[in-house]
Amino acid sequence: MEYLLKPWPWYVSGPLITLVMLLLIYFGKTFGMSTTLRTLCSIGGAGKYSDFFRFDWKAYRWNLVVVLGAIIGGYIAVAFLSDGSTIALNPQTVSDLSELGFYSAGESLLPSEIYAWGNVLTVKGMAILIIAGFLVGFGTRYAGGCTSGHAITGLSNLQWPSLIAVIGFFIGGLIMTHFLLPLIFSP
Image 1 (tube, rainbow, N blue to C red):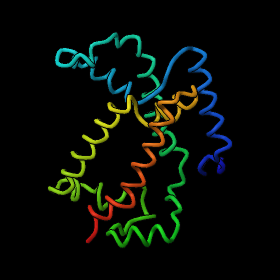
Image 2 (tube, helix red, strand yellow):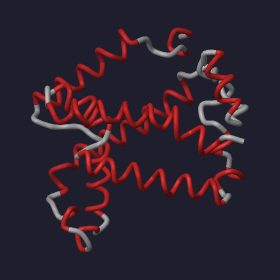
Image 3 (cartoon, one colour):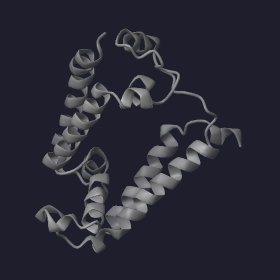
């Protein structure tokens, strides 16, 4: 049982993702979390306000099961298959993050300097969440999908636009990490 409490190596999780992708391709389905958000908005009546949400959401019900499975699977992984250890960060990364004011780096999965309620409910915390949420939402719509849709489904189907989108995601991540985070969080 102790082997279940350790993170799964790539040679277990990678083939499982591949198996899911092969099943999706076989059944003619595509996967992406932004599609599910669109489906949920459509179910909630957003089609009354935007043509983007006017579509037959019932054809995407299966995707809601995927999200439910991700939620249940995440809970099972944390509650029953986790030993409570944190991620092992490179000491240089911990040092770099502490220079930006992230003193809990390596001690928790989410930095309390951002996600603790006392920090979220500040003007800076709310501004970060609202601006980041807007940029993620805009970027997802502009790119025609999210990272999971493009990086997993799109690349599995050898779609050229997904390759371009994934390269853009990485470039954006590098810009955020090396230029914007130091501007936002420097003391």
